[in-house]
Amino acid sequence: MNIDSDKIAKLRELLSAPAQRIVIVTHTNPDGDAIGSSLAWKRVLESQGHTVTCLVPNRYPSFLEWMEGIGEVGIFKEDKEGVLAARVREAQIVFCLDFNQISRLENLSDVLMENTAAPRVLIDHHLNPPLEEYALAFSHPESCSTAFLVYKIIESYAGIDLIDTAMGEGLYVGMMTDTGNFSFSNLTPELYRSVAVLLEKGIDIPRINVSVYNSYSEGRVRLLGYSIYQKMGVIQHGTVAYIALKESELRRFDFQLGDSEGFVNYPLSIKSIRMSAMFLQTRKFIRVSLRSRGDVDVNLFARRYFNGGGHKNAAGGKSFTTVEQTVEYYKKCVAEFFAGEKKE
Ligand code: 5GP
Ligand code: MN
Image (cartoon, rainbow, N blue to C red; front, side, top):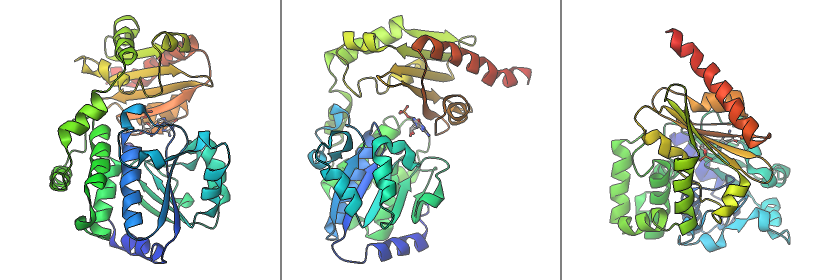
């Protein structure tokens, strides 16, 4: 993966003034890549003498709570006194990590757009970012994760000597979670070389694995069992699956934010399944998560039917009707989406 040297020069220029106030923002429902890449990039900027605040629109999942520096991440939804809004207004540079559209930041979007003085720098691997929103954009959809992209930027911008153990952990968490523990696409020799470097920096992979993947609550594990045994629907001649969970069901299992992370992947472990959807009812809307394998393009599906987007094999969107109506609508969309294929 090539990082444009002109862009690195521009980055250098932006960061050349000493001791700037910098804000790093990442997406709503932040995941391991969002948090890991943000924490690592914060340490890089701090090592250059800047003052850096990491911000997220809402809380991160509890399986990331062990990460160094996560306690200082500002949660915008919980910003009662307006301290974090002031940081955004006073920021001299804003880094946008692991998302492409400012509008995906929900409550954080408006204050961010109000600060027209600070240049915005995008570091992201999603498709089709609106480039006009950024002064500088490192947009690499071919990267497995934003964390790997941050690694490559560090390599060009400062050299890998700068990477310490905590940065290495952040970068590894991002790479690991966005690749499904190194099992999805975009697994390049270069990625594994970067992991080798992170190991040299002292990251403890077994400990990171246990912290991220084996630290669930009993309710979460039971909810997973229930979701698959009782709630998984299989349609389209055994090739498409879905799981829909209502708020009342979530309450039964003492649901905590992030508990359903990864559920959508399980149906894809069935040999014949090519696409899987998860519908999660929240107070305001139904969160739609889509996963696929091979040529099935769920980015297209999410854009066409659920006003969303993402990557070819992992995308999401929203639905504003009931759970029942959403599932019915999904079934119709699936029939339409795959109708073209049958004729071939
Ligand atoms: P998840 O299912 O893990 O929430 O999201 C999977 C992927 O789809 C992520 O890369 C995420 O950025 C993208 N995504 C999820 N929801 C939306 C949405 O509402 N709009 C867009 N454009 N992308 C989304
Ligand atoms: Mn990501």
